Length: 308
Image (tube, helix red, strand yellow):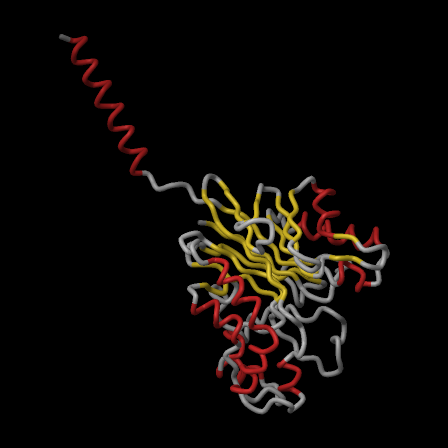
């Protein structure tokens, strides 16, 4: 009788343990992802190749990135080559080159979502799949400059010009996503256009730049928000005045006289992701959370720690 009772107790304990395990929430998967414009593969910095590569590798290592999305990844100065591939080889990481500008490297396996020409990449971390889209939108014409110069006089014209300049790539990313909307997704890169959150009526008023007199609902980021994406930096740093987080530009004195500084290097995610922390990576502590010296590019990079 004691033996039968012991068997029932053991069975009860086993069933209880199974039920507890089944009801336990799945562990969160976390990783760090970096968007990093290399400035013509590093050529734009004027550094010798060894110095440029060392600064780029230091950026990846000191940010503890797991995935890096590059823009302007092709170098020409030392012979035409993929700097992304060279950095991946140095780190023993995986690399997928999307085009002459865009490439993604990762310590985790990845694959193209829809065949050899796909610009969307699929990852599987801890059995959880998600998509990454690295974007590099056209730089010119650049509407914030045109507004500052008095060439664009109202928001409607700014939006129309921005759509004409760079509307196609975001639309193509969303078009290729069709059929995979159930998967979490990250869209990041050099948008060459501000986040529309940073040009709200309140943000423009607080900016107190006499050249910038009206808000603009910038279309590239607004299109993503309409598709269910969120600005991972601005969702956690809502006060634009306190945290402008300018990524354009790190060039001392600006790239032009009377530079218009803006946050144009962005990380957008679907709401599957929670963004634990975000950092601006750049040349000195007044403008960056993580400082790399020497800083090898004209954009500041953006790092996000995501979990889902």
